[in-house]
Length: 130
Ligand code: C2G
Figure (cartoon, rainbow, N blue to C red):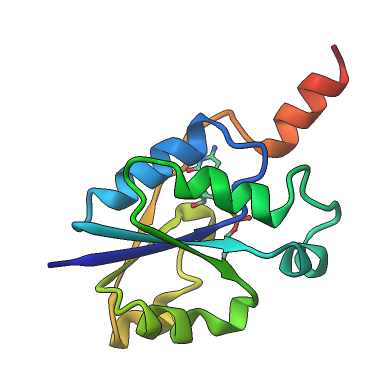
């Protein structure tokens, strides 16, 4: 059996997130998703997520292709998470292309193209302008 791992914030869940999770799942038969913690977002982004980590985690856990979820507490723990969940494949959006090549010694690393023209930031702007 093949385990796939992917990571994301998945804030204001949208079709681009769903497509990524579905495509990630197709690379194996067990899909594990690391949902980035509020504290991790606070460190790497200019705004706090709209939905809390508990809410984002609950949404991802309820998706059909997802077998297991956990909170991603730090970007530096990727190797640890890959090993802990015995992932055979790491799937990431191509906005991260090349950034996780260092893990090719323990798993396959795949970058998939993002769904064009949709993002959480664009959605927030669209809603704010209604
Ligand atoms: N995504 C996509 N198409 C979009 C928007 C997002 O395919 N239009 C994908 C991203 O490429 C990513 C996943 O959906 O694979 C989650 O996106 P984000 O929540 O933006 O993830 P990010 O904040 O980049 O978190 O450890 C890495 C981080 O946790 C990744």
